[in-house]
Length: 270
Image (cartoon, rainbow, N blue to C red):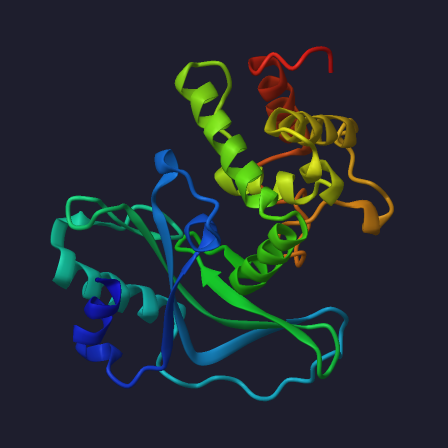
């Protein structure tokens, strides 16, 4: 439906773009209670970039075309409203939300641009840059998240993604029962990703969940990030630190979730 809306919108004719699902739906770690779909509409007319160290990538010239972040968002809103009408909600600073009366599931549609983070002059990570309406920016690495998650899942004989879904369902049940506050779905997936592979090879799912929750609780005992950068926990993409300035969660939030889940399931003494 979103692709159809873009194709039918005149100003988008001739604009180079990619439309793709991202997040838990694309990564097959979604659960029924969190069934909304994240859709990226990525304008590839311009490429934004950053660098690991100054001088890693000399500037190649400034983009002078018409597709600014403001124009991209404005035209995407117009395209979606033309097809979906009042089901389009623009109140969020990041995503344009499509409500479920027009589709089988809710959707968060994110306008973004191609982004490259240069580690050297020839080596870079490719992602997408999002310009929020409040003036802030965020970089996503959806393709890396997909690739790293698949590799982890293969290394654990499919147990990684199953464990993620178990803990997401656990989080939903705890929230519904008023036992614990809501925890972002993305954070849960990243916490499980940072657990060693051998935790997923245990003889029962109870043992797997016990090992994963225990590892999260013990490993995040300190609220301070390790001085050794190699010991810091990463997002699934391995391109960004999981606990860093500007994040909506802290190490304590993650530890509290593991502790609550452990006790809710009656797994014994931590």
